[in-house]
Length: 188
Image 1 (cartoon, helix red, strand yellow):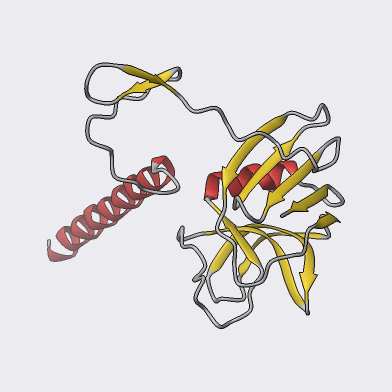
Image 2 (tube, rainbow, N blue to C red):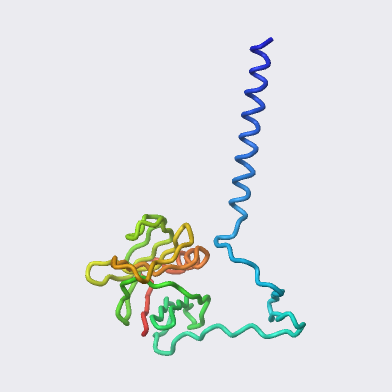
């Protein structure tokens, strides 16, 4: 009998480990890319939000595409605004979002996507994904990427890095939009 009961215990333990693994996977797959605390009194809607007083305020308009950024399909990166626009062939922004620049910034001008990597380790030692490179400064590659852990580059770092960090969702949007050869325009 002891051999039979140990087989049962082993089978039950294995089943429990499998169930925990499946539940863990489901939780990870449904979790947001970044966690932010909920704001007190915030009940957002697509048209606006309430400030707790019951009054609705319109959602702010997205930042317009910089006028001096060219025409056609392109990625526009504003150094001063720390913002990116993914611009369609019709000249309208498909998406815009804030980014966190690193210690090396490209000079204003027109570039093209030169290489892409699904996932690598960044020059700062952080695991990054959806890497879209478009230039370089003094031997330091410059491009967009998202840190897998959601971290941002340290602006006080003495290390020269050219990773312009995006959220994971924005990094995925950039990856889908900026194929090899896509124009990237950097504006002051």
